[in-house]
Length: 188
Image (cartoon, rainbow, N blue to C red; front, side, top):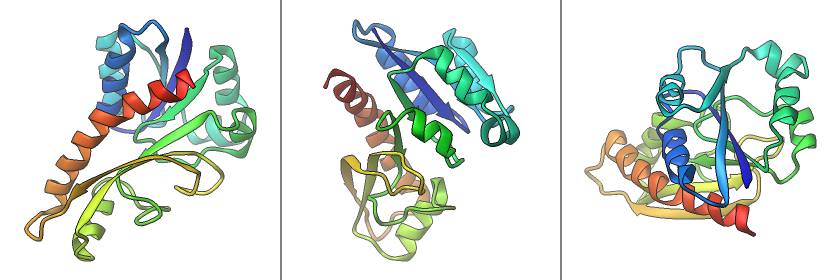
């Protein structure tokens, strides 16, 4: 059975979707969720779904080996960033090469990088009058949103769409494709 650890920073809708997708799987399961936000709604979701969850601070993440040691104890086959906003430290990248993936709410390389998350991305898409947007699932490297692209899915952006309209379209793509892509990665 393959083991998945999720990092999340916010509400955790993607984390919950992944937990539920793999609950009845014979091939993989979400074993733990880690968050940098002690008030993140993902913690409530994990409690309800009976999944181990832990919050940590920047010192534990970047200045010590605490999070690396937790990961080593969990032995994940894949680490999934699902709305996680901090850059992954080099020590963790080195320990898990090509084992950390992220989902980004835009068609990379457009609208990636520091500060490009959530509604910020969708505002930029509207401001630039893009005709399409989408999601990108990619491997994580030392730079924000620059790892090798695994999968992209697109949606149409109408001239009348608000950033919130685009967020809704992107959310549907995430819910549909993220679990399937992770399942494919773990089976390959």
